[in-house]
Length: 379
View (spheres, rainbow, N blue to C red):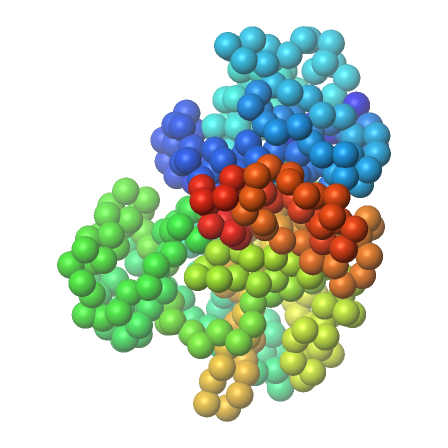
């Protein structure tokens, strides 16, 4: 077995300081249970996918998409997987690395050779995954794009606030703002603040700064389209991997279009399409300079097109997701689904009717009991 894949949906919230041994939120637990087989879609033949003890049985439709991938159910009651199992593994590939996952894997018997250093997670992954990083990257990317593509309309500003006075000043200047906690998943740490803020909303801003060290605040933009660019970082640098065109509803993920970059670019304004390859190279260069070899793995940069008085403009860094993303999942699906398929979240009983959906060119890979969670909760 080459790699053991793990879908730890609570990765982002587990990065909150002191959260590594805490129980993940109910939403994260449901995703980790119902979507645990998701990594089979990008795993290679011979790889394994770790499933929690209560995970639904992966459907035949998924197994056909992932021939040669092994599914391993974690034992219960504190038992470990056999030493021979771990000896056969060359590496572990999670959705994202955090201290909680490291703790869980160690409890299952994973040897130190397969686990990243805890200090690396705390000192590198955690701070780089904070939305403070996106705030710092945004002006650097805008400046680099201005030099490389001076005619490209760009927009975007964001502030990192650590004090009440600073937050009040930014909120007052914006009028309507989007506030973001440093770490969260599935849009749960993102909320709108209209100034002057209601007392309950202001208390949330203050609590975020007190417990997580700061809050990111940006103007509330008139969004025309959401998309992202995916990247891979290794010891040689940061490399562009592909385009991601997706839908959101109330800040929650709704689905990806599965197609090559040329087809995906057709969903964006004609004037932006020729610039996309250069945008990808510029963002990769800025990431390379900022991350500087400290992180290796996949990552995504969320972007958007915003409406302005002069037309559309590119906001080139809304979020930096220092982990695997649904956009990266869609890139992997290019090899198994026909062009122009849709990868989406469907709220129903686990894996129900997957055969029919796959026959129609749609992959049903993010499914849970109806009424438990809204569609599109896995961003």
